[in-house]
Amino acid sequence: MSVRHSGIGMTSQRTRLRMIERLRGQGIADEVVLSVMGTIPRHIFVEEALASRAYEDVALPINYGQTISSPWIVARMSELLRANSDLEKVLEIGTGCGYQTALLAQLAQKVYSIERIGPLLTRTRVRLQELQIRNVYMKHADGLRGLTEAAPFDGIIMTAVTTHIPTTLLDQLMVGGRMVFPKGTQKQNLCIIERNSQGYTETVLEEVNFVPLLAGVVKK
Ligand code: SAH
Image (cartoon, rainbow, N blue to C red):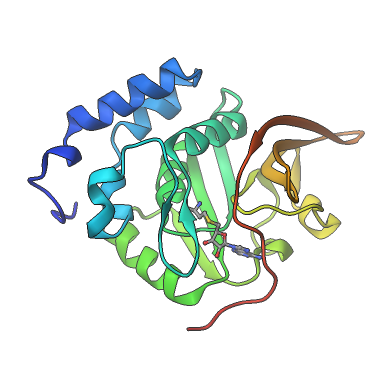
């Protein structure tokens, strides 16, 4: 594990445990998600100047106009994705700084994660390597197409907002699988799409605030 930023108080296990307590108090009920979040050094996923704020319940900038999602939203989406059972194969769209990815790596056997901004992904690859996370495959691509070569997935999580999920992506969901994502434009809500043998059902949940899903890739 990296020793970056070590030695400053806010990176301590105690600070993380306080974050977990707060999340529990805010209604996060999945103890598996909470205990894994208690082990991940969130401060190494943000720039050093912001490390002292990494455990606050806020989204923070991670360059290229993107943000690391707040601890609460990461916990909430993860518990919705897990639905109290272990995951096998998960697809994440919007790798960003890789914090959610690192969590998923402990909630699923294998994680596939797609990011459209090349330099962001390059940095994240190094970070996950430093953390010795080995069950994540990352791809620089437009995530809306999914990853047919690895499909079907029992979970798909998307961390950027859109109004419509294309069928090419929904097709990659296993029967019994679910997709969790923010949906909307000005007003956004968390949304779950579940696939059963008859087709798909959609559930709309609480209001959220995400950066937009964009088409195409950014090379540098
Ligand atoms: N979950 C990450 C990132 C959240 S920001 C974190 O917490 O750090 C949303 C991310 O989705 C950004 O990194 C953005 O570049 C990425 N993104 C937006 N549209 C995308 C697309 N079509 N395909 C893949 N990634 C996309």
